[in-house]
Image (cartoon, rainbow, N blue to C red; front, side):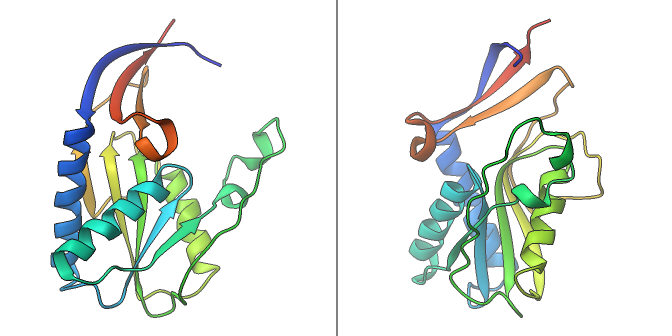
Length: 183
């Protein structure tokens, strides 16, 4: 496991709150409300972000969109290269997604491979009308032609840098850090 050096705090808890509030407004505006929207968080940190977006949207629109949980473990294209037994947790979709607008939610968009796996998992559970993507951080370096519809912050990074998202719900603290891999 590589070691890291903290370089800078990109977002504190207030910055994260503001970004999620803006993303929530953008989701409502793009979809002209929330009538057929389902937010689907990608485990692990996409789930609490999706739940927070749903709560903010409820304050804006007076109606909370359903929130699902997606486990993409078995859809990963590097599954055969992992040297450990992966832990597969259930995918939980509270409504039938067929004909709905599914907004996939994740913390960091990097190569696009996680999102490709998530789209495969979503389609195995129904045929949505559309799939949109909301991410807290887009750090670039795409390997697949995937683009987020809603982005909290674009952070150009080098291949020697890592984005570390910590959320109160999963980490007991809240910030986004830019870290560098120690040589």
